[in-house]
Structure formats: C-alpha cells, structure tokens
Length: 202
Image (cartoon, rainbow, N blue to C red; front, top):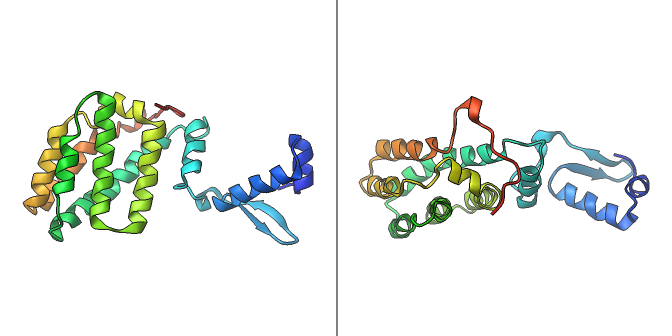
C-alpha cells in the first residue's frame, strides 16, 4: 500500500484518519503493518470474514453478491452436528421448545425467531467460540439479508422446529439431520438461482 501521507493526499483526509482506517483494516486481517515496511494487503482467504463490520461491508458491496447464501450455508453446516450433540449429551431443550413456539407471526418475525432458535442451540452447548461465530453469522443475516430470507421462506414452517425438538429429545440423530436439511434446503436455492441481493436491510 502507499504510505499514509500519500494516501491522505489522495483521499483528501488527515494522516490521523488514514492511520485509524489502517488500524481498523489490520484488526480484520485485511492488511498487515510492519515497521519499516509499511502496510501490505493480505490475500483474501486470510481476511476475518466473521467480523461484524466486515460482514456489513461485504453485504453492502456489489463485489460480494453471495454473502447471504454463504452465511446461511455456514449456519446450516454447523447446526446438524450441534443439534445432534444436544441430543447425545441429554442437554435441557426447554429453551429450544420455547423458541420454536415463537416462530410465528409475520414472515419477518418468523424468520427472525428461526434465526434465534439456532443461536439458542449454540448457547445450550456452551461453546464460546462457536457461539461467537454463530452470533456473527446470524447478525449478518438479520441485519442485512432478512428480506431475502423471507422471500425464500426461511422460518415459514414452524412445525419443522417442533419436530426437531421431538427428534432431539428422542435421540433420533437421523431425524435431526433430515429435519435440519429440510429446514435449510428452503434457504439454499439451486446454484443457478443462488443470488442473494447485496445490502438488503430491515
């Protein structure tokens, strides 16, 4: 990257503003700053994609049109094993039952409640790292892609969530995986249709 003085001149901002911007990008692993070498833009796979501000930037950018799909896909992949673990460890599912009952109301309310169900599942397992990851994914979907989730019917079938609670309590891991797949299959269009609108917000 150009030095901070040159960037300030090009962008018509003070050196302080440039320094703060570089610090922010560094905290998201987008750039790396080293003494006597300046700042270098890191390869995209090294970026911190679960940073909330990063998710917001990407959702608002036309350069990343598939953010909603990637977020819901990542959520789907973690939930099947997570729900099976709740069953195998015989953890209390009362909070999940309560959350399943809340998947009702308007399509937006149902989609938001469905997302909350999946966050509740992570809270029950009590894995701080997975909770942080899941919370960031759900934040991105809620804040920027909720209207898209409504369009594809996410949360539109609350009976699936009640059945999922039944399967967890019955320790039926096959049913858990099948129901989880059904829930998220509505949110994962075929490859040719997989185009989530960027920057959709409530």
